Image 1 (cartoon, rainbow, N blue to C red):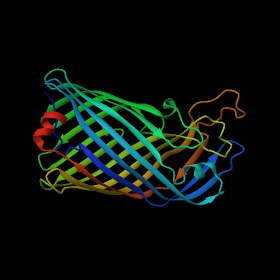
Image 2: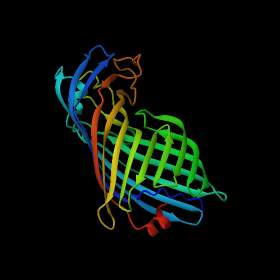
Image 3: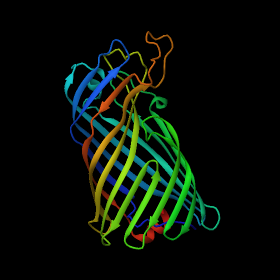
Image 4: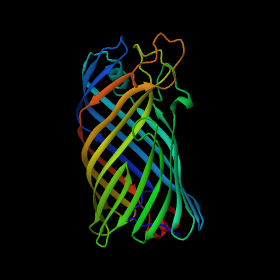
Amino acid sequence: MPLFDNRLPSKIFEIKTDVNFQYSIISSSNIEETENGSAEISGNRISSLSLKFPLLNKPDIKLTGSLKYTDEQFYFEDQNPLSYPLYVSLNDRNLKTLGGGVYGFFHLTRNRSFIIRSNLFLAGDFYRSDKGFSFKDLAKFSLAAGYGIKKDSHTFHGFGVYYGYSLGRPTMLPIYLFKKNFRNSMAMEMMLPQSIKVWNKFSEKSFVYAQTKISGNSYTIRLNNSAFEEFNSLQLRQSYLNFSLGVTHKLGKWIWFEGEFGYSHNLNFNVSESNFIPNQRFPKPDKKYLIESELAGSPFISVSLFLSPPQGFLEKYLK
């Protein structure tokens, strides 16, 4: 079966925290009742828990399940005006993501395979005290499917299509996957146009890596006490292009540490409609977004602890 060993430790359970440091935001809207705004985001924290587990292990079919929970907070300072609805509604709120997915690897012939990954998750401000959101408002779905070719024990190619929220808004893109283990201790993985990662294995316990990655999400929110109250629900669509360096180090038999630092460039931090309600006093806006924001780039750090079981277990169940 054309499985591929990328040399990195697999993560079956991970606790992770990402922190972006202070950066500025400038916002504008084409809704007349809403002024332009600006502020400093003094911090942006994302904490997450993730779990991966085997579902099916057959000679020609392997299925792996995953669960993930994230909690994200923004902290605003020096708002101008003080009542700007986006900053007031997001400040120190817990934007959450909760969901799971299935990864499938299907052997076709000799060195060919079909790969599929699907995720269903809820993302938004779950705990608005005035009025909750429906499952339909919060639900998001992503899907990637491709055809893989294992050229040899060190090279893997894949071609497919991706639908999801990496750009903040639901987008369908063609994807190309390339994995390569070099003769020395280096390796690389590209999933274009989303990510490139290169790493070097210094010892059985240590790796260093460099990567660039586009990541995004879409949170269901509501902007209370503002001109946007008449919208049943809104989407905060955000995406970032990150450049980073990191280290992965084994602490114990199953326990690993990972630390990463880098620079984050914002691609999207805009508010759009989820559901347009007829007969509102606001017409559908001419622009794509109700509120458009420009964010300055910022440094970030990421730290995590994760469990990686023995290699024999990985070969049997997870790879």
